[in-house]
Length: 346
Ligand SMILES: Nc1nc2c(ncn2[C@@H]2O[C@H](COP(=O)(O)OP(=O)(O)OP(=O)(O)O)[C@@H](O)[C@H]2O)c(=O)[nH]1
Ligand SMILES: [Mg+2]
Image (tube, rainbow, N blue to C red):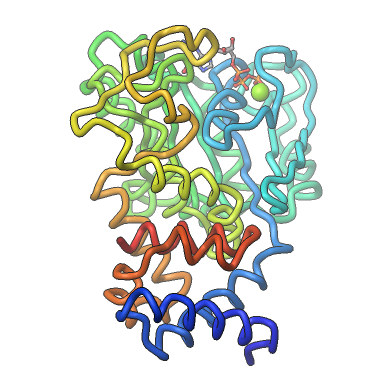
């Protein structure tokens, strides 16, 4: 049942918009109410990422890039002991938990005891919404330590854990032959994972090449939106809506800045996030905002419909409505999320 506040709010919004836009119908009002209710229910939920990968491959850097936040320390951690390290943060009022497994993919003596590590992880990790397997693109093989890490995770969480996972290759710009290495390394890692899950699950795990020192990969494409897309569509149902809400304000901004960008606008290769001294073609565009391609928007839309099936029926009318203004009329994190959802339908 819809609560009274939601109903009143929706009435008000639909009335205001009806004056200026004929496409708003009463069924749209109902849809909006359901959407707001669904999002409100997710407001106190969190999403959990579990990071797996050797020391120094760029796990923390990549999560920080995606969430545009210093969530985990970069480069300072010395992984010599077995432990599970958790970083909890709040973004737009949504909690996120990043779990690091230092030592799991490193050759350290303590790891001789697999069973002990499996128990340690099982006791400490209650929920995983997405497992990240992070490795350097410029490393040619799957190391013994990485194989061990894959095995331990599969045993600790059952092989089904790989259904909600992504492979992330860092240092994309350091690879000798980018596309070939991306293809080859993806295959090798999937083969390794397949030893535990079978090929059916393993071959569906997406791989994304990133470079935390650059906005683009060697093919000149932006990687941040691709990472966002794969993370979102691979995430558990439970974690996906909170993730969408946590990042919603950066998606709405994209929408409002859309017209300010030049049509063939492109980022500079090897642009350094830290220096920021190169002149940007769009001074109002923030490097942390997302610029999705049509395909990425479609993939995200499909996942949103899986999460909120009522949107399937209303697809066309949602697209016809201006998301940004409706979002700000609703306000708060729920409003931002409504705005971003409409953006993906537009
Ligand atoms: N060139 C380049 N350097 C990177 C990239 N990602 C991370 N680095 C650098 O690699 C170093 C280690 O990065 P972290 O993000 O701390 O790696 P980590 O996997 O979290 O390391 P631990 O927490 O120690 O296991 C830092 O100096 C980063 O700046 C990348 O994509 N390209
Ligand atoms: Mg780290």
